[in-house]
Length: 452
Image (tube, rainbow, N blue to C red; front, side, top):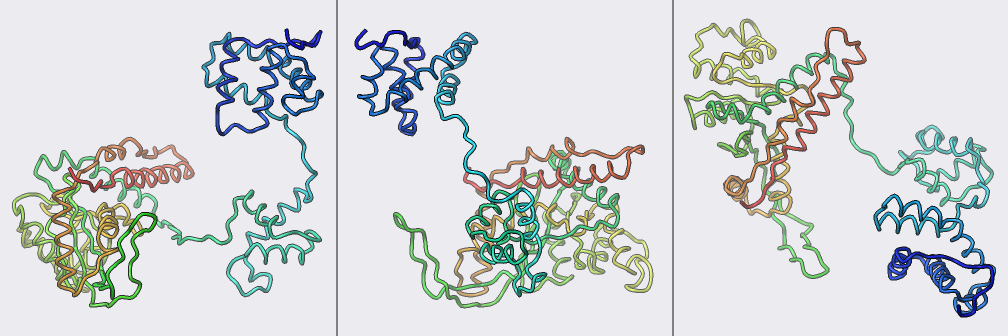
């Protein structure tokens, strides 16, 4: 062999040689691994250590070191090949065996106790330390760490790194509503009933029962941009004019039919009074006046109004005495009116989402589509123009809508009702499962708005 050094030989199988050459051609391979692979291949050809050191620009000690490393790891490679490892697995093994061994690095400047103290300080409010701000910046936190005697000195960058390692983000916040459920069993019953209805939407539709998610989107502004937008071009996104003229607002009442994904009988008006909502329901039912209707709504007062109760009683031919609002009978209180509207033997009935759980209403998903596809960039010259644009979008949506409703069946799969032997803790877990299941359904049943 050319320039072979007696007593030092390296063996490389044909498969290993092929894999090493493939790694050499990898553009993202580190230079450290590149010259180590070249040393192994040259040693396998029998070249002397001094020759390889001259060709690679490394010292003879380095060449000898990686030759010995290969001899140490070679049995592991043979075992991997004998176990019929894939080429990808062998490549990963080669890279790991030829990589640097773990090093201890420089000793840490801050003890575990100091790092915990810094994280604890970051979780407290600046007001507690006499700073009239709402949240910490890394610079202020570094100053306070020194003032509190946690350490004598610390850089802003080190504080930022410690915050990242602890997954703390003082500069971020989001809105949060504490549920504080007064009656978890009632919440489970109400949300469970809605989940069950969603799961049965297709079957109910075949039976002539319309399951409709209904809600209002109020305060839709009729905004006119002072100047037209600048269209996008290569390397530049579309730019909207910042200044606008405000021409007024409109309220949209929409019905999302769960089984078909269509928006039925929308109402665009200036107000959303109880008379407006009752008229909207009336025009919706007028599409199929003899069919049964199930409306999923939230607990807004106009959804439990006297006008709505009287209309349902008239259409369903209910002759029971309704009483008087605030005094007696069905009309006395919101609770009694809601109980009447929820009565299961009525041809037209309403199902109410739990308090602070309007996200269970699928029409909210469609409102999100409306905002993204129309309202966010729309420029209208008047309230009438806004109304026209809304109705045109709904017509276009109904013509091009493609529904994904397979996720509805997840309601029955994830629901878990507590047995009589469950502890309160287990019942809480079951309630969380139902909450998570309903929210998962909300994500899975998002309407896909795309051309057929």
